[in-house]
Image (cartoon, rainbow, N blue to C red; front, side):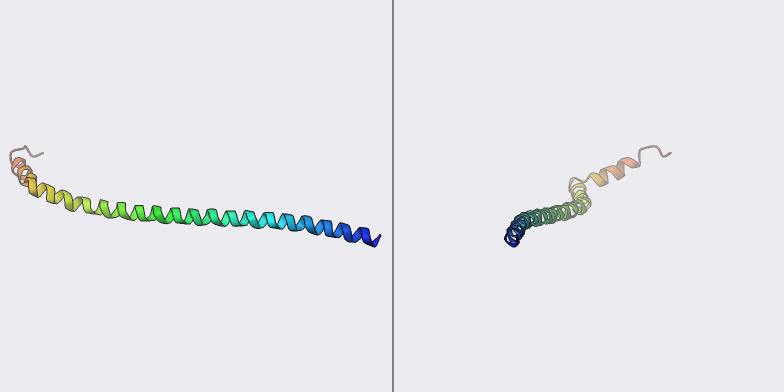
Amino acid sequence: MAELTQELLFEVLRKIQTVLSSLKEGQRDTRQEIVSLRNYMHVMQGDMNNMRGTIWQIPDRLDRIENRLELRELAEAQARFEPHP
């Protein structure tokens, strides 16, 4: 009877080992996915920073374009002839 008990105990331990190895593999996959998500978030943060920088440059660039095309002076000169509310 003691022999049967040890065999059952070993069988249960083997099943536990199988389940644990499966859990470890799942945990490893989950960690890899989290690392991938982190990397993706870092890339997106870099893209957002680049977009912010570009957006901040737009007013300066627009001013330079208007000055170069002399649009600002034209608008000011035209404003003198338009009726005031």
